Length: 51
Image (cartoon, rainbow, N blue to C red; front, top):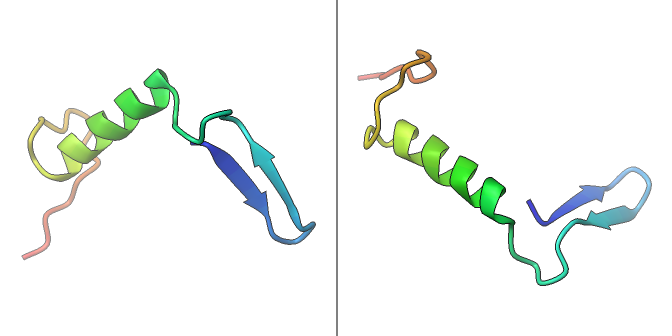
């Protein structure tokens, strides 16, 4: 996460000086995407396959 936009109040809150997410955010994102795409197991039952 690099920024949160508050549209109602016309404000933006930046959390990154260079516009890139930090290492923890990157790791979390990559883990979640791997679970979503079936590249890693889903130990919590988050994914439901719809055929």
